[in-house]
Length: 457
Ligand code: F6P
Ligand code: MG
Image 1 (tube, rainbow, N blue to C red):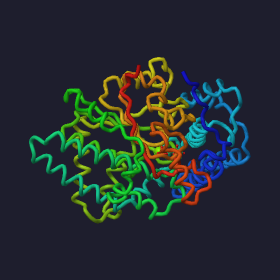
Image 2: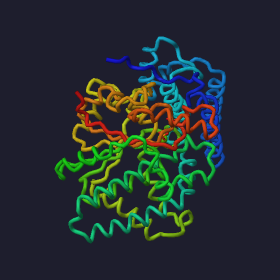
Image 3: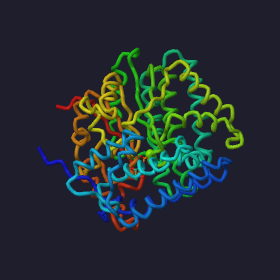
C-alpha cells in the first residue's frame, strides 16, 4: 500500500496556497470589513453601530496576525460555548505535531479556520448574529451575471415545455440533455467569488453562457459522467433521490437549480435535496436563506429588465417543486467543521458526519460541487495526479455512497488524470508566460468530473 501523501502547506511557493495566504486572504478580509462599515452606516441602531467597532477591531487583528504569520490559537472556551462546532478545530489542532502558523500551516485546515474566525468575530456581537458578511458581494455579482442568467432561463423554458408535451422521451435524448445540464452546473463553478476577488465584470461574464462552455469542453480532463448516468437510471424511479453538496450562491446556485429542474421535469429523479452551509463560508457559499434571496432577486425587474417571462417560469417551477417537497434545502454544521469528508462516516458522531453518512445511504447520487468540497474529498493531499479518484477519497470509496464530484480546478490537488497529461499541462502553462507551470491546476480553466460508486474493494 503506498504511503498517504502529506497535505499542501502555505509556505510552498509552487503551491497556490502561497499567494492565497499572502494576497487573496487579505483582500477578501479587507472587503468584508468594508461591508461591516457599510451595514453599520445604514443602520439607525446605536447599539449595532457600537458593536460594529468590535467587529472591525477583530477583523483588523486577524489581518495583522495573518500578515505577521503568527501561530494559530485554539478557540477559547467561551467561543466554543457560543458555537459548539468550533470544537472540531480544537480537536484537529490537538492532533497536530507542529503548531500551525498563518503563513506556513496546512492550507485546507488554515483556510477553513480563517472563515470560522471571521464568523466568530461577527457572531460575538448580539446585533450581528444573523449578518452575512458576504451577502452584498454575492448578490452584486449575481446582478452582474445578467446575460448568462437570461440565456439559461430561455433554454430551460423551451426545454421544459417540450418535455411536458412529450409523454415518452427516448433515453438517449435524456442522456444527452443530462450531459448538457451537468456541464452547465460544472462550469457554473468557474465564477466563485473567492477566486475572482480581482475579477472584472467582463472576466465573470466571459466564463458564463453557452459559448464559454463549448470552448471549455476539451478542458474537462477527467470525466466519469457515463458511470454516474448508468447509476442514475439503474435505481427504480420511486427511489431516485439526488443530493447536491452545494458550493456557491448566485450564478452557480442558479445552474445547480437548472440541473435539478431538468432532472425533475424529465422525471429522471423523484426528489432533489440541496445541502447548504450554516454560516458565511469561503465568501460565496450558499446558505438556506440565500434561496429566498435568489427568488427575490430573479424577480427584480430593475436588475433583470428583460426576459421576465422566462425568469418567472424558472422561479415558479422551482417554487412548485419546493411546495411539493420534491425539492428541499437542508443544512448541517458538518460542512463548515474542521473535518474533511473522510469523516462522513458512522464513527463521526460529534459534528454531523454520521447523520449525513446515514442519509446518503439512501441517495442515488451525491453531487459534490466545487473546489473546496473537492479538496475536502481528497484531503487536499499531494496525490500524484494519476491517482485514481477512489484511491484519494479514503473510506468514502467503500462507504456505499455514490459520489459525483463536479469541480473546476482552483487549487493544487487533482486526481484521476491519464498518464502524461500533467506534464503537458505544466509545459503549456509555462508557454503561456506563467513562471510556475504547476499552477495550471489553480487557474479555474480546467475541470474534472469524478465518480465513486462507494464499493471499491
Ligand atoms: O483554491 C482557491 C479557492 O478560492 C480556495 O480558497 C477555495 O478552496 C476555493 O477556491 C473556493 O472555490 P469553490 O467555491 O469552487 O469551492
Ligand atoms: Mg465556494
